[in-house]
Image (tube, rainbow, N blue to C red; front, top):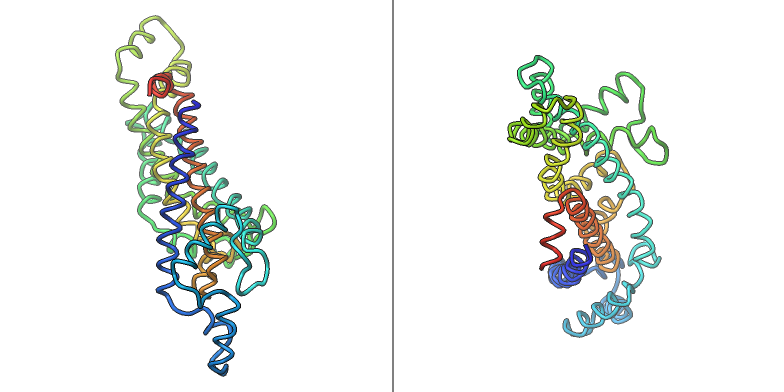
Length: 309
C-alpha cells in the first residue's frame, strides 16, 4: 500500500510539472491580458506601466522560472480580475466541484452496482432487459442533451427543483444526476459483464454444490471479485467525469472549479488559471490514488504485487 501511495506522489509531481509547462506556453500564446484589463482607450505608456508592474515585460524564461518557484511554494499570485489570492479563490470553487463530482460518483456507483448484479443474476428476465436498455440509453445520451432535458422536466414543467445555482440539497440533485448518469450506465454494463463471468467460474459452482445460500454466494464470493475490474473502470473514467463537470457547471450555473477555469481562460487570468489547473491535477491524482487503494483492498494479489515491486 505504501508503494502505491509513493508512486502516485511521484506521478503527481511529474504531472504537475508537465501541466505547468503546457499551461505556461498556451497562456502566453493566447494573447496579452494587460490589453483586456486596461481597455482599448489606454495609452501605450499606461499599457507599458501595467505590463511592467505585473512582470509581463520580463523575458519568458524569467517569467516561467518565477512562476514555477512560486507554484512550488503554493504561491500563484493574485487574480488579475478578482484582486484576491489566486489559490484561495480556486480552493473556494474546488469545494463546490468536490461536492458535485463526489456526489455524481456516489450516485453512479450506488445505482450501477445493484443494477449490474440484478441483471447478471436474472439475465433473461424482463427486469434485466429493461435495466440494461436504460443503461444503454443513459450511456448514449450526452450531458448537453440530458441536462437541459432534466431542467425542462423537473424545473420548468413540474416546478419540483430549481433550474440553477448551488447551496442546498435541492440545487445539487439535477447537476449530480446529469453528471453521474453516463458513468452510472457504463458501470452498470461493466458490472453485469463481470458478474456473469464470475458466476460461471468453477468455485461458484462448487459453492452452490455445497448448498450455500444463493445471495451469500452473490454478495460474498462473486461481488467482491467482480468489483476489482469495475473499480478500475471507474478510475479510468474519473478524468472524463471531472472534464464533464465543466459543462455541467456551465449549464446549471454551479460556481465550481470548472466554471471558474472557463471564466479565467476567457479573461486570460494567468494566476487564477494556474492555481485552478494545479488543484484539478491534485484532485484527479488523489481520486486515482483512492481507486488504487480500493483495488488493493479488494484484491490481495494487487497488494502482493505492490509489495514485490
